[in-house]
Image 1 (cartoon, rainbow, N blue to C red):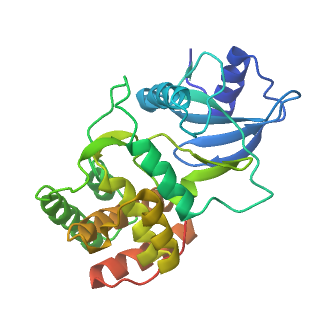
Image 2 (spheres, rainbow, N blue to C red):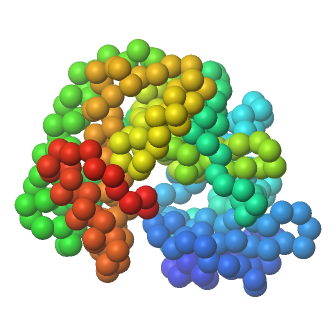
Length: 293
């Protein structure tokens, strides 16, 4: 099959899956392009169109979420078709759509409870990679044409420093299956049930890695002490007095730069501005608030 633009890849995959792509609505175009496909029977469908090079991640997400749902874990549900579907330079997956228009996102407390349930599950019969924070960050930074040379040098050095300190940590919670990008923005409602979504980065590693993003939100994104208390209470462990937490939140700080670096590469002026704000605050080593992506 020749390489296809993502819209043509969507049409091809929909036909393979027996779906009608004619009224598909673009929701987001980034590293992964996301469409909503109306259906005449049952809930709408979400289509994720990703580069073919990420096929292993798409396949893992489908297998893992099916296994999780078989173990009564509340996660987003892949559509019951044979997938992922190869479409030229892309790979396409299909997911049930959950209408979120009637209420806000689940709270940090809900996420804490979801992570407790996830971390208590047995190891899945799926090959999960070892957790590798900032694995591709240095390549992303050094290949950026929009970052100043001085910032590129500092970010690579800061990554090296944090990973060296991370390698020396002892983790009180031990190791197990991780979601890999667990923060309240990756939760959603299915009726009155909170679900955990976005299964692109599951891994096996220190469980504290799944707690750090929400706790980093208390530093950078204005999450209140009450929200963080509810999160840690629901999880059953509070790492805020653990000496290793600043290292994990520092790794998360750098991780959150990735999408802005990619958007800046495509001329997104808002991303360029926010990137400058974030890097400046990191280099000053302050805890100023950032605008949520």
